[in-house]
Image (cartoon, rainbow, N blue to C red; front, side):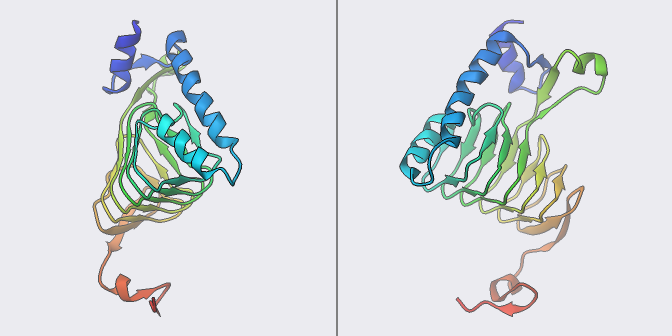
Length: 203
């Protein structure tokens, strides 16, 4: 299969073989920048920011992603807004596009996955896969250990509880938790007055 056709299928939900030699050369080159990012010193904030701008498809200002950062394509297909913070071990399976809004927070060990495989073992043994984009809207907070599966959209302002497995879309302005992740409640005015089981917010 021609490289152009493979790339079309990568981003269009079609089946392709991810072990194509030309495709792997491009992927390896993208991962070189990621390796460099992960080996920066804690004091090299400006260097990290510059590398992220080289690595990502799009990125806004004021983003901070704690190393180690893991990305299948070195963030090549990651679109990120401003003010994004990711704690350690963010894993972006970015075989197609991941869209992250402004002021999104990632707890440690979060996984965002766009890639999946056909069920039949004969196809999987040949490294067939297909991809679905993921959308995380503004002001979302994903708790530690959250896994977001291919094709999911998480609506703005929502909070995903630690350890959740997000298998379907989550609406805006809710708290959702579980495996599979389900809406627990709406975010409301009480959340502006109180935190941590009724403690008053005094800021």
